[in-house]
Length: 241
Figure: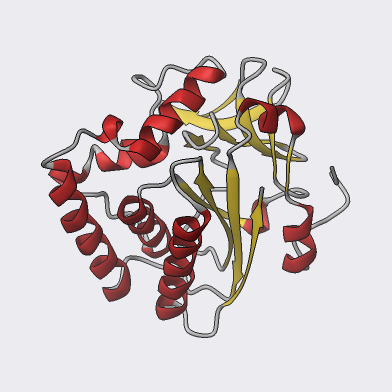
């Protein structure tokens, strides 16, 4: 796996260097990641595009949540199994899509334009989806099982805190440390999207119950929404099996 040799200047080369470690494939052979990189994005607060997407996602989710508990959705149930497989307790640290869906009855958070767009796609398509600032990456992204030595930069009590993941935890990382803990549970402070982000990477996570057609549809919905909100943005995507 390529590490430490590709920066973010060329988004095509960076995208090709994104990888999944064999130890993760052994854990969940059905896992796939659709990775979308974008540049020329228009950052800022929510707009008509993001608000329409969030409202539509809330309406769709409320309809099926009235009949089904989040944990009983086939894709979310598979993610709970994946979390248990590396020692996480999904009742305490939920897969990101489930955590968002549980907020639907009270209303999804409104954060900023880019975050609101990817949260809406995550809820509407019932899959974990995260976005990060590509300019703050150091080397390519790769999904690995932690050794316990990788730093994870977060905040606690308003202060910067550096944590270390337990060995075996599934994490996304770059050359500087962990960018997202427990597969898709919590992103680090260093690469989070901000009101000034113009270049970003979005990762859509899929397990067996979500087939490639549905994963591609979610990716298409994301790129369409980003284009509508940021005319002129350039995007590339890659499905990693």
